[in-house]
Image 1 (cartoon, rainbow, N blue to C red):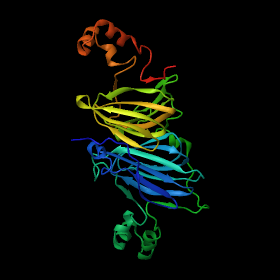
Image 2 (image 1 turned 30 degrees about the vertical axis):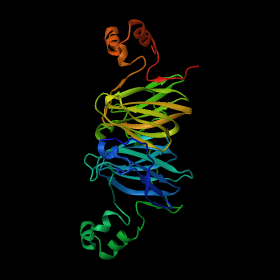
Image 3 (image 1 turned 90 degrees about the vertical axis):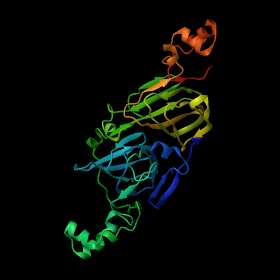
Image 4 (image 1 turned 135 degrees about the vertical axis):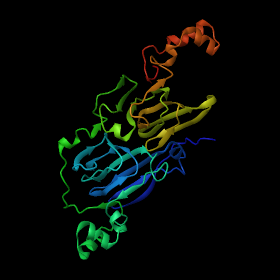
Length: 356
């Protein structure tokens, strides 16, 4: 079967004055269904409020731009009210109720990536809203709502019918939302732009990895993530996930070129990628990227909590571990060519700055 790995932009699902919700769909990006991956974006204007909801899929949220407030309620726990800003990453397990609010002039934009193995639709998130025209309350009869919360019929009708918005609403500027608590960020949020770097190569690039060590909730969502930034004209080494994980990549900023090679040495993707696009690399396929002049950054999830990668170039390359005789036989070359091949990239690892 021919795999369509072409990067895609999201489609708007719903929205209004308060903001919009967009998503990628399996019909346009088949690898979503193939890999049981979901992807969406929330954009909130000033005073925009995404009403409380929960999802059928575990997710990682990444703040692409702006700042605001997030509310998080883990099962049988108290609400956490968290200040969020650009670069923040939040792990959101199954069944966790969340809400999002933007009180600033600048638009707040949040990316959601996750797995859909147990979702209603493979390759797509289904969100359940607690209020609004599509909220759970509206589905129950007045009798059931009244009995459940011990309310009279008039109060039930007011409670259920007052909020006519769908998912995202715009609040009055004078309305006061809960103030975030600094201590609530602890254990829930990792800012990828401020966290210690896992990889830092001068003139090449930088990586921050989200895993069970720096964000414990990653263990509950079941997959890890990373933010990669490479400098202008730098290259990310060809590599693959050696623990059968899928790589789901969203281009955060900049642009560049990408190539993906699959089975039988077939190049299955060669294209130019830019900010806002999403693409998925299948299990064991090899991917490499080269940034344009302004550099390029991307946020990825890898469908295992603590991913392991094998690189095919650089100091940590698998080629460096193989014996010279094996390389000579495998490439069918003489010792001089093999030695030339082995002697290159002895200090660079993962990222390769441009040649002067």
